Length: 120
Image (cartoon, rainbow, N blue to C red; front, side, top):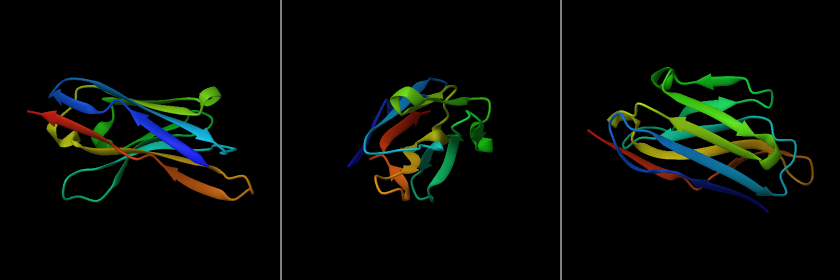
């Protein structure tokens, strides 16, 4: 069984910072892309940022220059450093990890989601 445990969400004023983390444990193998998605109120889930096993990164245009994604392969953990937060960054942030299960099937794993609220 695979568990993704997220932490770091909360309430912050506009201009502030938060750091999210997501640690995967259990029978997950050959992790490739790790990423963060968010769902804002009344909107569809969108990709915020992702990072490949070779540390190549990809960001949504709305967060470029403000957010930084990183990963610790030894501990199967992905981070999202969020600076200069804006009210429009408010939403539920979920981590996504693409790996292989114990029988070799490629699988998407999701965290439970953590709330980020940015006040104006």
